[in-house]
Amino acid sequence: MKLWSMRRAMLLAAASLAVPCAAAPAAASTAAAPKAAPAPAKAQVPVEYHKLANGLKVVISPDHSVPTATIGVYYGIGFRIEPRDRTGFAHLFEHMMFQGSKNLGKAEFIGLVNANGGVLNGSTRFDFTNYYEAIPSNTTETFLWAEADRMKGLDITQDNLTNQQGVVKNEVKVNVLNQPYGGFPWLDLPQKANVNWYNAHNFYGDLKEIDAATLADVQAFFKDYYAPNNAVLVVAGDVDPAQVMAWTEKYFGPIPASANLKFPDVSEPRQTAEKRSEKVDALAPQPALAWAYHVPPKGTPEWAAMRLIDLMLIQGPDSRLTKVLVNQKGYSGDVSGGINWPLGSAYDYNGPMLWSAFLIHGPEVTDDAILGDIDAVVKDLQDTLVTPAELARAKTKARSELYDTVGDGYRFGIVNLLASFALFDDDPGRINRLEAEIDKVTPDLIRKTAREYLRATNRTVISLKPGAAAAPAAAK
Image (cartoon, rainbow, N blue to C red; front, side, top):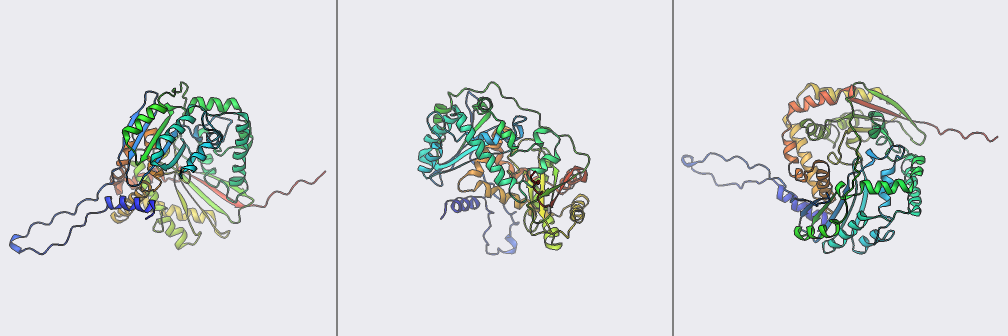
């Protein structure tokens, strides 16, 4: 059995409903009152949480089902709070972390993972930058040493910086500038919906600002933010927690904390008027429409309700907007979206966030027609209590998504949740309360949340129109 399917099967089996066996009918005079069906078992993720003297948060989740381990190091610095006039800097720095450290030269970290049959990656998100690798569990100490080595000190040279500036600029050109619908709507909607620069700038980066990054910028950024008191280490898998802590103390313990952690105010005011704009895309073959609403603050009951609203309105073939916009009206073959979509999950961010969606449609369809149908679906949610059956279906979806996440064979999903909850909430154990948070949502709370957060005055809309590329200027 494949690693992923084996772990997922074990997890689902542990959390499945207990089905009572059928019994022979008893005599009428001695029949006992029927027992209530047992409640669904809750999946419990083992969580050990520690902190080193230098501020490093350490989360360990032992799982001996297969002889592998996954290590994640999350730094509390993402593109939301990168320096002004240095858009794309957080992403650029992610690349710099693979350019070599004191004991591992350029690309040697990657080579070490590959030589041991592991897999690795890194990413930059709104509120963190992360690095993670899944490796044989008997190499856990080696990779704790390797992660500590690059946290302790990068090989920050002008040659490495110049090289990675070229790599990142090429990514922007390939993934955004030279792609139809490039960056639409995930780069565009935050810039239009938000008013705080930290939430509303080009996260991928303007080419001229990527070029403007200096060696001094990189060195200061590393010293300030890539420090143990701004990081979480997660180790999940076939490990002994006491041994992991001993190695962690040995390799990470001597690294000094940052004395210059500064974080800006990223709050957003309540939106009180709908925002509409238009974008022309010379490469797009068809029009597209994107829309977004600000979501409730994380951790509130309304946020949990919004999580279910997302599942009811847009996720899956049974969702309301898919039924109307795709199946009934035929505007598009698909409606995509979600909370923190497509850059992460509904759980791995820390600050203002959007629930966004988009579709590509034919030129014969007007934006107003699509928005009118969206408004009708939303109005029904605002006026009429959802049925118990629809709410139960949404909760089942939420539970299924959670189990898919923690059942991922490489354990990247469980590492991501544990790291996010430790980094943002100082509470990795929240992973075991997610089901309870969702279970508490009522039809009344769904309606209340829809009335406040799905207001038209809380919405941002962008219409994308295909357009011919500008003709080159005539030679003089």
